[in-house]
Length: 194
Length: 325
Image (cartoon, rainbow over all chains, first blue to last red; front, side, top):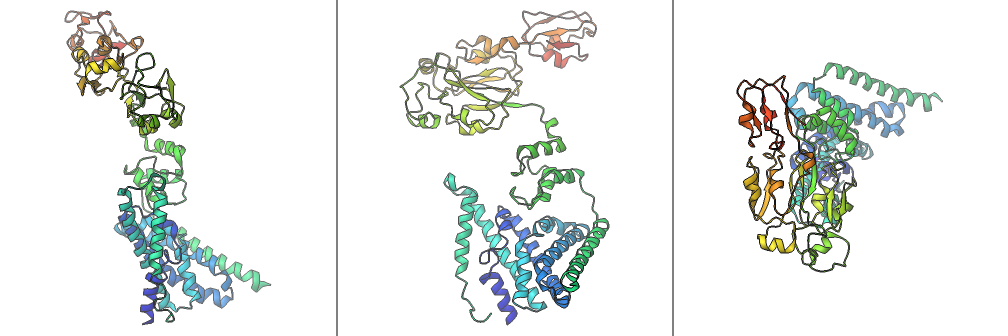
């Protein structure tokens, strides 16, 4: 039950992009085409799940025992960057097809604030290991939902008659804000349960 | 003291060293050979992974450029400098032999084209275009108010006697003037093509003549004069097919209104090197102007008064004995 609530919350209510405004850079940068958006979101989901688990372990097995929990942020950045690089190399060698699909998005994720955000939020909400994993994957799926929907909108925007002053990024920003307002409708769902 | 400073240093340092070693090992162990071009282009790119190019980071763009799926100018951050360096890596410049330049297709300057009215509005071609297509009596002609001049980032267009003229030395074929011209009378042509039809008036000969002294009246003389089938009259205006044009300038010679421009001083003459000529007669057969004479096995000679510099003979000569001077 609790896991279900966490995943729904991560996808809809506390959507990383549209409610918490994390990971805006890839959201605007890689949402021009639908297929790249899908590749990016698969990679983000994978890395967020993995980072949640590893960072949870770092926090509870290294930082807390040594009493240096205040180094959380810098330690997590280090771990995530190293981890993503490592995963990229492994995928590149072992599975060229998988690398084709998501490997090229991995370098972009090393410093993605949504990944760092999910790792820190897991600790702040004192989730256990399983809950952290679920929250990480759920956050990734929320990211996927937002970016894929947005890419669909942007593909249509290319064909729409938009005033010259608003063409390109301005209209994308406006569309993104409308998206965010729409997702506000989910806030208050399950309030008090989490 | 140790707990507050030493411990964090050791723990974080340890983590960093651990990941450093793992990554160093992994980069050797999992090394994959890639196209060296990808690596080189990747090094030239800014490396910010901003995604501004529409690809997922600099690596993805480098791959797309190397495989020919993206133009070398795709990186918006790097601009022309990075593009030039990528071009060097890709060897694009070498394959792009023919430089293109913009040309304005109008020669109706103030002396030749009549004015319909006196325009006193904003000095902008687009504004003038809204008032009955500009003040020039020919609605296809250059308005001459310099919208393209202001748009050109290279100072390569100037208004000369009421019409825009491109400085071919400075033009970089960036197409900005083409996009901004409300008349659509600027086009890109290979720089080596010296002959131009400087009119786009699609009206019948008489109407054209009334509007402008140098407009194309679609008399078809150029079409008949062209021995290479490179010029056609479409919609009452002559048009040169530059894939066939050989710069013989015959069309410009016969044009009664002097609409077709060619600088006759640039005209070359064929010159046969007697030491190399073996008298094969191939040049004679290929000359459309009967400008080469000579017997089989004898030395051939170019008749200077008939040669128009089309270079067909020198292209066909098996011994490279013909030079264009």
